[in-house]
Amino acid sequence: MAVTQGDWAMGHISRRAMLAGTALTAGLARPAIARDVPLQVGTMLPFSGTYAALGENIFAALELAIAENGGKLGGRPVALIRLDDESDPAKAPANVNRLVERDNADVLVGTVHSGVVMALVQAAREHRIPLVIPNAGNVAATRDLCAPSVFRSSFSNWQPAYGMGRALAARGVKQAAWVTWDYAAGHESADGFRDGLRAGGAELTHTLTVPFPETNFQPVLAQIGGLGVEAVGAFFAGGGAIQFVKDYAASGLRDKIPLCGSGFLTEGVLKPQGAAADGIQTALHYGDGLDNPRNIAFRAAFKAKTGRDADVYAVQGYDAGQMLAAGLAGTQGDPVATQALAAAILATRIDSPRGAFTLSPSHNPVQTIWLREAKDGQNKVIGAAVKDLADPGTGCKMAGA
Ligand code: BEZ
Image (cartoon, rainbow, N blue to C red):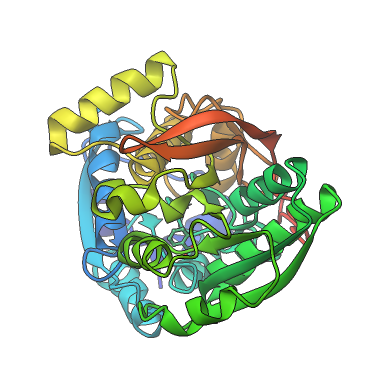
């Protein structure tokens, strides 16, 4: 496909035209992107299903970050496209195709579910479209499948669970089990939990699974009492986390075998969990009441915008906006200048409500994993489980790095 004058005049040169265009292959300089042409930001998030609340908070906080940046990214006005991925991996390729081919998205932001995000990663690699992942922790995105155009504002599934394993072992627990939905996020969290336990001389003895997004937990709860473990860690989030925590308490297990987990277990869901969540310790890169000016201002602004309390999902959406602002400022709004965009993001210390962070060479946040305890409707920070934790980034070979 040739790059036509019309493409440039529209300012919305299609990426395929751009990458296939003669201007590039002939080594000619590209004309500057028109500053007044809206940048199409394609968001793909769950706005329905068990992760709907997570998607809504990410989207609202992304809007907030863009508004605070004067409604622009890289000097260009922003058009936000909103697509509900339903946390359905089977629909992901068609949904991504809609954003890339039909909507001509210049940059992508998505998503929550580790299975769904792989279609976004594939598109970002293939079409060299900048992608910021505002939640999904699938380790491959910043390990084997790392790419100059793929960035994460959130975490790898390994990170929070590793922190939880380390904290448990430090407390003297020797044997623990992991309960999870049966998909990448849960299994990779189990790996982190295992590694954290091992680092402190303890072991993960059992992993029990429930199909995603099922919330009939009775079969696994019936097994836990007989495992002979001192603690149970869990990966559930959103609607599933509400149900699991309630069912765990109702089963009578809570007073016999303490429940802990990656922080998603109690994040953004403490109200509906009620007293069933009291005392549950989790590990996450965010906590309520983190006492830094950025967090205080962010929580107030998010509450004013949405009427809701901010949570880690909101923080990650906000930071996705901050990362895009930094990257596109470095390219004067050109989303196709992948290497310059990556260099600008990597050179920036993102001033996050979680505490400032930088990205690792594989484009995943290096961040403190906080130990929190659910109390009085808050995930209160009670200490650092691991300071400045980087995902190992195993297998990442960054092209052009
Ligand atoms: C995931 O699928 O990666 C995920 C979903 C919800 C919370 C955390 C991780």
